[in-house]
Amino acid sequence: MSPTSLAIRVLDLDDMTVVGLDGVVSGDADRLVGAVDRALARHVPMVVVDCSLLESLDAEGSATLADAARHAHDQHSRLVVREPSAATRAVLDLTGTSAVVEYGD
Image (cartoon, rainbow, N blue to C red; front, top):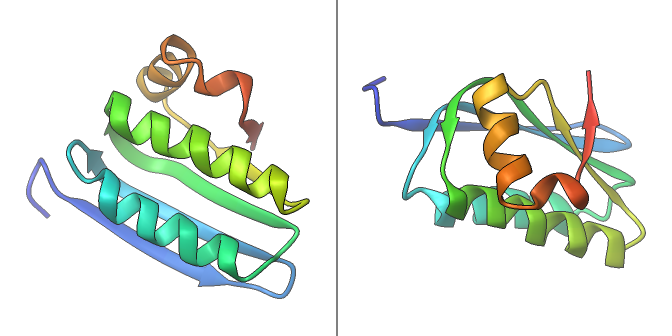
């Protein structure tokens, strides 16, 4: 994987969908939107965005996660961001996304 690429892996489980991000979200927000929208379309109680392998996230990606969290809430579901790095968490905090997403281990 090149330093600026993003791999997205989706794992559908019975009561949740995990969207795993690996690499860099920079100008890839449309791919992220598609993956999260498909996960929310399953109407599961929880969508987990696994950031444990995410190297960095831009403001557009952060806004995407905020919009997805609001959409999940409207569907009586939850969007949980799992294991963001300190740098990713800083972007989420600075853009206001931390106010609308949940964090999990």
